[in-house]
Image (cartoon, rainbow, N blue to C red; front, side, top):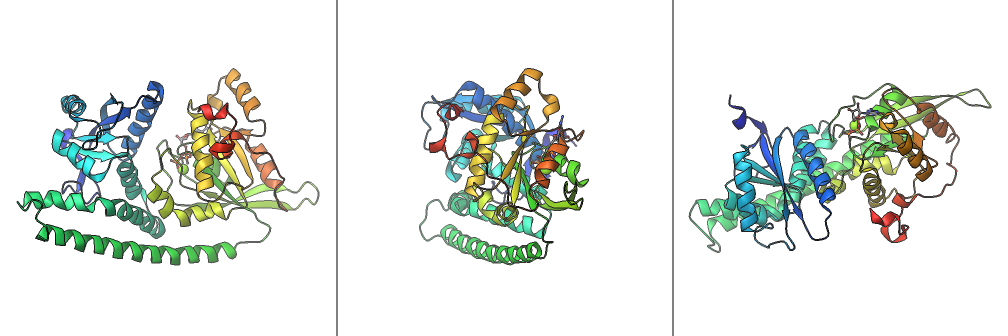
Length: 407
Ligand SMILES: Nc1nc2c(ncn2[C@@H]2O[C@H](COP(=O)(O)OP(=O)(O)OP(=O)(O)O)[C@@H](O)[C@H]2O)c(=O)[nH]1
Ligand SMILES: [Mg+2]
């Protein structure tokens, strides 16, 4: 089969009647007057990784410099024309945009360029749809998809209506269909919410049934930081992958922490691996994943895992800090685990040690530094955790030091 027409399954129901996503895509991002070129490039790099995680093949990218956005097509006709010519020359059939586009802007871009168009949130949703395994994860992703599609329904049907020749007729068959579709979507949303409440109750019962004296710890952090690798280093379970959002389902395993220094009794903790965070994590997903993230909320303490070698470390920490606050875990006791420390240069390691004096430096693959993590966990039994000072990335924007807000 010609690779340019190879397709992967996609549940994006309203995308121009497509049932599958084409593989070759071209990435676009707006560079506004306040956006540094380097930042836009980093965001495009992350978008390319997201596209790969969705099974797509990025074949090119373009930063579109625009002082203001355009209401109809966001990027403006001229810029879009140039970008779509480049995209078509590279063999792409789909544009992926890093910016938040409305449903009608997405469709206008499709009409103007003759290419498919998907924005960041839609892309992340399709990754989650492909990965969700358990009943709970599937229900959560489906809920997020419907919440995302609901405000977009109108335009999608208008488009189909046009194909049928009934443009803009009030009360015509298209409009009735929109109403039917909206009603059915709302019904499904409320069904899914009920199902999730039930599943959350089951989870809560399981939690209550867990052994006393065994603290529950959640691994949290930016996607691809090494959370699953750390779970593996601590418990022997878990399949790490070099891929964004490899983990969607929560896995909980027992970790042996060694013997109590005084009594000699063995100490254990339950460690949960969780879905990773990302810049601009779609709010529909955060809301839908509330019950999975409940594992984080009800944990006694958190291991906040970060890829220490990423040039985006500070930006990642900031995203993690604000997502934790958003899900109601701003005050949980935590240990910052600066993972992938084997990839650090010596000067960078010294610098990070100064910036994060309480952090553990680990190489989860070789289990370096894991003993320090175990020791911190051991000290949680019997709880509660010792009080500690917050670092800048854990604080709300208004409380951050001026130096920190430069990121
Ligand atoms: N060099 C090095 N690579 C690591 C380390 N820890 C993890 N990795 C690699 O980083 C990649 C991501 O690891 P995962 O453990 O899957 O990361 P994650 O945070 O669970 O990622 P998601 O579940 O996708 O959010 C894998 O390719 C790992 O082999 C480390 O300490 N050093
Ligand atoms: Mg993982």
